[in-house]
Amino acid sequence: MPKANLSEVLFKPSFKHPETSTLVKRVTQASAKAHSSLDGESQSNWYRMINLPMWAWRGIDPIEVETVLSRIAVSGNRRTNEALLDTVVGYRGGNWIYEWAKEGMQWQKEAQNLACNEPEKAGNCWIKASNFYSIASYPHLRGDMLAEQAALLADRAYREAAECLPFELKPIDFNVDGNVLTGFLHIPPTGDAPYPTVLLCGGLDNFQSDYYPLFRDYLAPKGIAMLYVDLPSIGSASRWTLTEDTSQLHQQVLIQLDKVPWIDHQRVVALGVRFGANVAVRLGYLETRRLRGVACIGPIVHDLLTNKENQHRTPDVYLDIIASRLKLDSTADSLLYVELSRYSLKIQGLLGRRCAIPMCSMAFENDIFSPLSESKLITSSASEGKTIKVAATPLKSSFNLGLEQLTEWIHQKLC
Image (cartoon, rainbow, N blue to C red; front, side, top):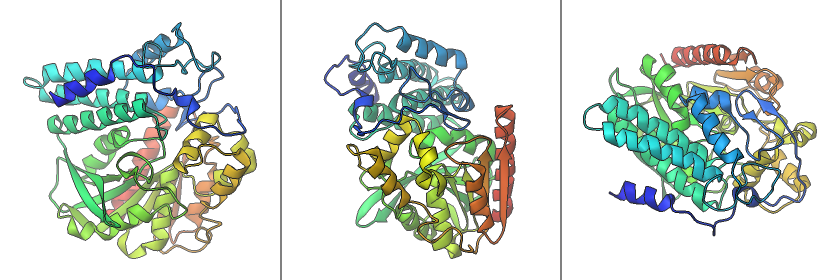
């Protein structure tokens, strides 16, 4: 009953909450348009990036995506900015959070109907519900109360999915400065504990359910467990502030892994996606004795943090995400860029120095957030480095091939 009640509360029309695009008030708006294989495409009439390839990779039907986007586009309700389709004010038809959460609710109901007789089908429906709730919450800005409720539903749906699907999801509590940080251990259906484990450091705009295909299709078949820990300022780590010491939480988790009976703490690889790679690479330098290797997907460790040209080409929503995480909701872009430079691992004196552990990095063709030089900077600094290039077309097969190579590299380091 509590789940249903929470959903019913979420679906009541409300007009008192601020519209997402108004939460970050940067003085200078970049208004840049960009295409990214990993993050999607920014379009002139949308505030958010539309990420059709990755949504499809996560298992969402493109036709269903177009249906939701169409409902948003044709809404006649008032918008914060009439030029941006996804800025409908109030929790009602046409509002981004409302429409995506509404679709998630349909899959949640389907999962509940299937729960007794077809648990695996129910689990897949829960996964779809979680994905829709996650998209509803995107870009997960601080202070977006409706998005926070959608994120709560995404997390709950994902936990329900784990009860039905052939893997186990264990919440693991870690003590960080007297507070509890919860990580989520994904245990594969094959093999025996303790498991070799990937410590997954996600991006600034993703939740753990977004990475389920990575675990299901690549790590689990090789008997590798996946421990997901949110970055500071998002999800279960929202009480912590993101600082230049980006790896502070994950480092504490890494130190405490010997107390987790399901994890072989001597066989751990850190895997970082986007800004999460900043965390993973940092761990590689600070905790060489506790890691077998570091892997990255589209890393953000130096270039975007210091390259003014690429910063100016970065879409508003991505800069808003960064500003929100750094608690710079009201600042000039010039000050934001200065702050970002402090997060460069090269400027911090780490990258460029020889790292004692192996590193592997996936680089996407024509990626403004993470050019090829970013991955090469990482791999050339490692005792053993490998760069995997992902072609822009055909993206689906290139991305899958890249993940297969990355997973095989991880497997070799953990064996």
